[in-house]
Image (cartoon, rainbow, N blue to C red; front, side, top):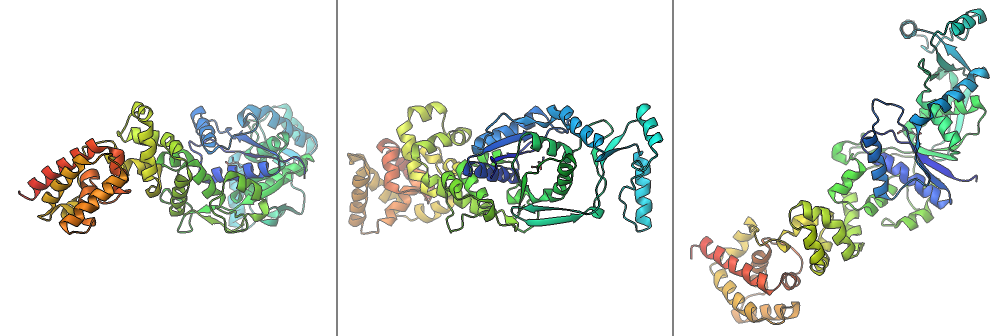
Length: 482
Ligand code: GLU
């Protein structure tokens, strides 16, 4: 195999789509597996639609995913003269020709052909002009487009994923490779840039297959060696149609904002069309790099299942060390107004323990904020359902009072002491421990679900637990009209 050099070539559109992220990952894995290089080309020739901010989104997204280019990014818009040189080469060699046809005339001809049920392809009017006329047009400086002169026959390429694909030239046109303003069209620019960047394998979405025929024809016209093509399947939404916003068709950085870990996103998108050949699902980047090959990409379209991504994210949360999670959680907790950065820095041990208590229950980083409110504030409401279930019985008030008295005397205030004291009280009252555990949980956290009650109480501290039980006693006595 020649030196592996692969690239992604996104057009800046304001976000990095999940499909482009997956193409980036497959290219990156292929490069790493083969000790090659992974490159980035920004296809920003559409000035009206490209801006530095949009380019920045691509760079930021790739950085977040950890899929950065091994060489400085190539900007297509800075290479217009180079594209033109190659167009000129094709003109000089006679593989391409100038076309002075007015767009309206072309349109009329096409309509006429359609009416007469003929193939509306270009009739080569300009190719067939007498030489004298061509010379006159050139000398007068009349603007022209450039068309590739297609030979008879068909074009075939052997795709590493899709297999051999062929298109008859009669289904194609002498297509335009440069517009009358002198700029190369998309397919021409791609060939020139891929050639000059010495790209060995073009791995991209299979919506580009029809472009590939044109690109192969341009390579052949220029007499250049073609890269190996590998067209990866599309990603569909759950209803097997094009992915919509509801299916999770967001930009990559939106996943970060929603609370997904980059490792989970990477792992999940890797499996959208590729598999390691066994039933492994949660895989590290190293494992994926080791196992990656184009042959193991399934040509059938992949389905994006957001539920699975969320499940996988939970798996990654559990595998991430607690102190690392604290750092990852910073923006979520701060944005929810639960803590300040200063609080996190100065109460580091508390934060690490908080994460340790909740991590089994969270599937998104944002879940820590929504489920962990009571770790950071005393001002929470009691869940209504919980109030009806655990605060309503007439005995609750007395039980809470007794429990409060016992709590006051617990020292050290730790899991073991708390547990044995609660069990002791339950025995004395001749009730099941759950009859105390549930109201206590509601009093301490405002919710009916959460991590181990005693661990939670130990972390919150004796002082806070006493204050919260007291608050609950006040609430219950008003609520129950005592
Ligand atoms: N700019 C194209 C896109 O964003 C690049 C396709 C390619 O990889 O050649 O789809």
